[in-house]
Length: 472
Ligand SMILES: [Zn+2]
Image 1 (cartoon, rainbow, N blue to C red):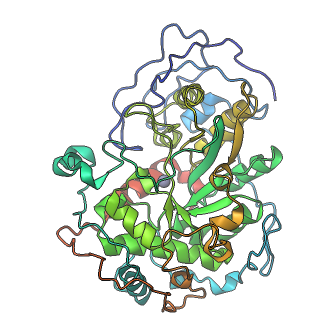
Image 2 (cartoon, rainbow, N blue to C red):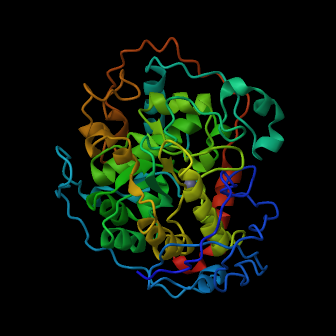
Image 3 (cartoon, rainbow, N blue to C red):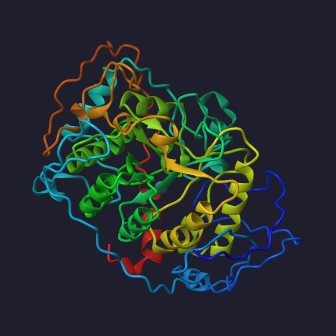
């Protein structure tokens, strides 16, 4: 790696790590240029974006870059030359990961038939035998689901009453968190690395780089994409990365009914179990859209939410990398965001978790060419680990089947079976242990039934606009 951009920039403490916006990924307001005092300018960043507009240039300084990195100008314009790398291996049925104990063998992928699963990028139906079984499990969990009405599409501006109701602890509008949310790593200068929205065509490129520099990450996977790229998911898992849940179709979870939330989480748990043999215990709500109703359903389904670090409304540890492909953030802005994240991380007593993605090549290129090389050369040194590791937990504690329940209680201790992820397309869950009577559960918020289609369409549109070359 070469050292680049050595001129130091003085970054004000707690300067915005990302532009203020209503919801991550939505079109953002006009960008605030970097401070005029910034001493170094990145090369050739102010090229036309994917949408044809010229994005502002931001100054940043990196300790190192990857000698093989794609020039920022190419990343910005979407004129990319990288090719999808082949997977390093295709993992065979029966193989067992070697980096933690007691993992079950990989299942036979020939039993994972796309026709057995819901539609790509759409919230699954709630009347299937599988979903009905998961609903029954949630009802029997004994975990009370708050009677909170779903929000409507549009986020904070279109949900004034929900925003005012702070009792629902809606992260999206105000950043409210509960003790059960993972928002940081406990140790200072420890970075809980995460990548969302895969598996995707360029995930193997990220995996190859991570292996090259001996890093591993936490992948929050979109369930319906696992159907498209099951071998990529297996490579993530077998090469030492943490696999976690990122819903089936990537909706705003607070807009969904209880039953739709259960369908989104249940099918994602199931497809991961069917492909890997293990069921994740961790998940991330798309856009960070979680409130106490979504939290409770996740808890009842044995899922622990992982957010990204947020110090204030304008200081969130979001690189904005997703927005390069959409043409709303320039690569230099993402590097500026990342530099501010590291600067802000040095001011807090804990570690931190950053939002990054592996759906688009642009995000992978900016990570492998710039962000991760700079992070590895950072002074003071950063400890870069998957979230499960930064939490001082073993990989056994990342999955239901391998978790030591006696020493690491799962979120819903009344339901420690993996029945909700019966493999092989089985229609019926095999009864949970069901210690709860279910009487405490309230699932009566039927006032709004939002299919989540709006957000699903938005997600698909972004994919389409910016990745015509991805051959999804
Ligand atoms: Zn996402």
